[in-house]
Image (tube, rainbow, N blue to C red; front, side, top):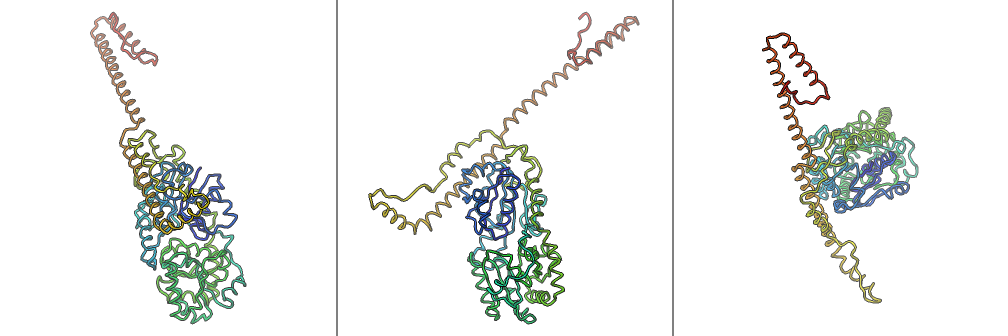
Length: 560
């Protein structure tokens, strides 16, 4: 089977990047062909992974895929579109001619909880795009029951089309163990009680509540410190939230006790620094760090919100959402009660096993088999625009293989859709000084070309290809209203059968009329011997009619 995995990016350290990597390995080990398509180059891949993925990761534009220049993508049997929010490559879902489609929904943060001006519009667009794109999929897969409920209630997805598949955590990498003395020294944590948070510093995570809880915890645990491990600088929104958190920590007198590490290359040792893991997040579609913490033997305190309670189960303490005082009280309980902490650790280690890679692969195999069940008979998708999700396992009609009414005109538009002269290179033919002139031309125009002209042309090109793809879909949809050749053949055959049936009915009526006449003639005979002879002759004629080889024409009367 040929598989295409699609996402905005491929960042090894984040949950979606790990999911992509697990899926890539799953298909490779099954013997399938698999490629990953992203809009941005991979980030943070280990050397051994990067070498294995070298030929399987394609950095592409939506315009390039919509132009159908990538033969592998165009002829794939399964497409898995990951949805962390709206991005351009998702538009290719609408024009697929063949293959099964899985829409893998990871969740989109509500703009109201984002906590920053930057990026809120993108989140609103991402939320609005779910219902518009999920309808093109054969199955919608998501990572928690909370997400599944959101898909049904907020985005109108059909419940029967949704499958829940929790993400996996490599349990061999996350396990209990002693804290690394070098890390403790590096972050000034020797002799401290560490409250750990792992994740991006986004507004919905409500790190401000953790900061507000810290001085309350320190009343009973004076040496408590908050360690924040995760991205706080790659996105302007993260920078904005981080600045607000630092100001709040300074106002509360705990600025020196709140440590930000940024992204780290080796995450598991940081969990082993922690005495408790805490999250005050108000919106989580899943929560991979919770599982990593449980697998590392760290007790949990989390807000009783969204997916948190389901992920944690009975392996952590829940606090009231948005309540810094309750959060502090639960953290202080764990730090002050060794028996409670030990019980939570045991429960957490057991709960973490529910999110093993083996569990993920088993569930993913069932979903893939279900989504691709109909491919064996006909790999082509129906030509439709914006349908509701198709229930998995039902057969799809093959796409018509006949010429479409506007095919030539649409393909002429496709040939002219490229707006950017990609092979163009600034040159000068002047002898000797030609390279210098070319350099001057490039650098004099780059201040206009790079920030303004290039993005404008690229947006125009993407729009052109979306128009071409939409016209192709409309053309196929119009074609569905015309009788296909096989439908015409079937209609002709039905007409022939009806005519033949009418002929047989006429001949049967003739036979019945003849037999009735013979019976009536025999009844009118006065001589018993003649009547018996006539009935014997009639019986012989009926017997001949019963034989399969006997022609169906009515027997002629004697002497006639």
